[in-house]
View 1 (spheres, rainbow over the protein chains, first blue to last red):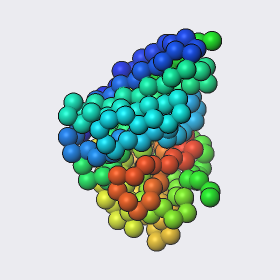
View 2 (view 1 turned 180 degrees about the vertical axis):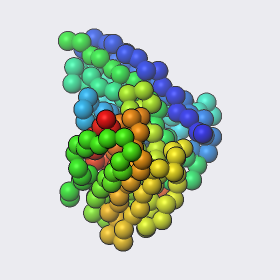
View 3 (view 1 turned 60 degrees about the horizontal axis):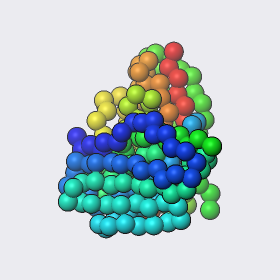
View 4 (view 1 turned 90 degrees about the horizontal axis):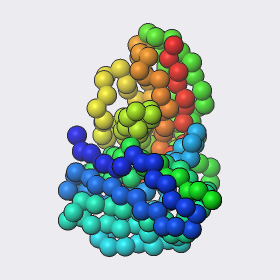
Length: 111
Length: 113
């Protein structure tokens, strides 16, 4: 069973700080990687996707991918209380037919 | 464009019963995936359907089954319900491509008593 591992947290940061979320995966053949945000009682929503090694920036969010180390990360700059949620790392299997999720990291941003 | 629609939103069943959940994907999306979410196990992959064919299956017992219709709508069935089946069941769709992002519905919260 291919796995995706994340620290469960909670990760607590003050407002305005940088939050760093990490994820490792076991399937070396994976080609696409995603970060989803899930608020309590809501369904996951996509915030970032990354397919190539390196960094990808979108507003306050930066995704980083290192396929050699099988490592994906998400940086949230200028964290806001509204960023408080569970962040799920998701990795497609080698065939691209199943998106496997980590158990999520809970982020708490205090004002 | 309308999002992924799941019905019903809430269900209460008793042990031994069976249940059918429904999912309508985003218009034009041909792939539908189903997930079970529990506090302890997180989001676990059940199966994925594409063009009425099951393309992948997670590690769940045969009591969990699904199907997809020609209009891409999908149903998931759980027979002989157990207490441990209480969970949020999420449906997600994506375009015909593999490796594409998933868009989730609001889920069906199933409680087994």
